[in-house]
Amino acid sequence: MQPKMLYMRKTPIESALILYLLTAGLVMFPFEWLGNLFTQDEQLSGFLGLGILRLLFFGIMLLLAVHMGIRGTLAVRGGWKGILVALPALVVAVNNLPVVALAQGTASVTGGAGHIAAFALQCVGVGLFEEMAFRGVIFPFVLGKTGTGKKGRFVAVLASSAAFGLLHLVNLLGGFSGGVFLQVGYSFLIGCMLSVVMFCGGGVFTCALIHAVYNFCGNIVFELGAGAFWDIWCPAEIILTALVAVAAGVFFFFALKNGKPDIAESFAVYPPPKPESGGDNAAGEKSANGESGASAGEEKADEPEKGEEQSETGV
Image (cartoon, helix red, strand yellow):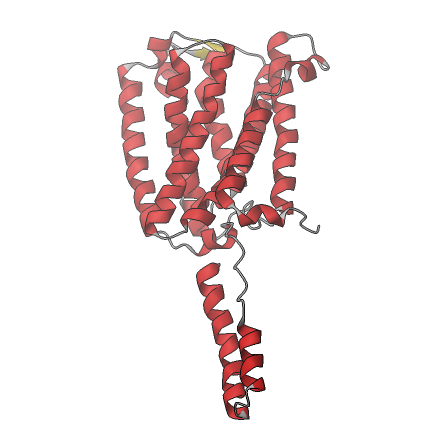
């Protein structure tokens, strides 16, 4: 497929902002009507409608990425290193399940198999769409502005993750709740973690899997189970979560700090290099002024070196 939107690469930050607003618009798109086409069960239709619509939006973001010339973002790259860096993130996602409360019997999952499957579909759809939008499109554009150096990579991770967290403020449209601000906070942290996974070669599909597992484990009891909030977040669960979070935070900090930029360089969206101006005219003027053939030859021999030098600094 021939890319048709390469002009977006000229202004990385402006393009990232446009794509962010598009993502926010898609997030606010109503979905209940789609689920109602399959069932009149309100909860089941909500799961199905949101899941299917997010899968369609994932396709839209993937198509945009192709037309903007973004490549190498979907699959794991860098061999086992790309997989290993994702394993601690998967541990964080699984730990979002209230294992202590489930083991003690103070929480339980009561939903039927159909509802659980539909909820899993919703988590997969949300994970694919949001990871394609943020880690697969917006993050590469931000990297194109900040660069993949030690300072630039941290700025890109923090900036794109802050945008990811703030996106969840749209949930305030359903009514004010302090829980929304808590969601913004942990979404920022999860965004940082998944951005590091992406930077180190994990790929969008791996990030989407981790995202889906995190949402599924964290919401299955609230959506399809029973258990009071303070029974789920008992002291033992809080301590376990804090230990996992601190260990993961240290791991991902050093993974980003010490990671090689090769993989990120391959998908970062840098502005196209500006062409050299006046080089050919200068050579023509020198020839017209009667300079020796040797001098003209030296001038032409220098031109490829300038081109090489430019490609190293501009890309």
